[in-house]
Image 1 (cartoon, rainbow, N blue to C red):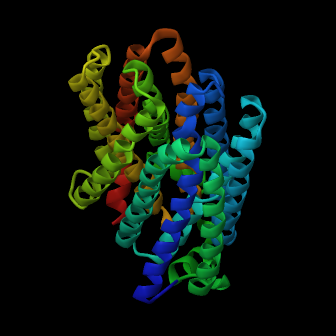
Image 2: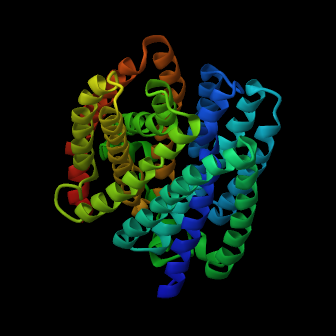
Length: 420
């Protein structure tokens, strides 16, 4: 375990840098997709399949990454993920058509999966739970800042050069970030520092009593985590569905250019950052300190905001257009807050069992089950029934999320009381 203040700060910075680069190389396709559709590079159905491929392999990869993250050197898993993602961003623009893009982006999804569970392992092993939660906020905000940069950079890059240049930029940035991360991480956290049996007194005790640990299944059932997985799937559907398709919605419904639609979408990560700081502040209180109770509230408020969107989306004037965009951004921000509670905070609660990375991987896998459904599902629903029906589907998904979070609340609350 790192002991100095500067080492802990460096650890958080390096994890943030890696996740910043990860998001930049993950979001490239979804950000430029509206331009690719406008220029007939892809059809909406093929674009949905490309996005779905990333999410399916990301979700599946989380299971392996979570398992390996508790057993191998997490810094090397993260470095490998960044390098593979760099190669995928290099190859995708070189593909002759959308069908060839699907396997390339699927591999990128698997590479991206090698980032989050190891980050959970590194931070939970080396920080107290309170500092771990704060560090997660910083790392997560780094991802949103990356998205803001990409939303601002992509339209400029497309107007000056082409959509292909966005992917090439991502390749270069990923390689630089990956090399810096590994060199600096080796200096801060030497080989033995992140091994589960030597990193701290806490993990030494875990290793000594390895045979006495509860199975992962018993941990999930006894602590109310299984219903949380359904809640996370709903959150992933909403978060990545809105992020992936908002610029297309804005372009098609309100007849805006692809460049202006991408720029309008920059509001998404800005709202999300504000929402994350807000939920972190109230996470210290009694209500949101229980992550599941906070999620019930966030899903309920999302339902209330989606209802007026069903009507506003059919009115094409500037006021309604702006209000519809803002409501969608606020709902997405609520989902990012829910993601922070369920993906960042919940796995850290299981650090003492030595399963933080495993639980983190399972939770994140569920996120991208929802995301994979949303990318292709929203393409089909919007194409067949229109965007009003799509927003109605969002209401249904939010209701499902609230119901399953409520089902998990009793057992999870009991676990938190016993954990004190």
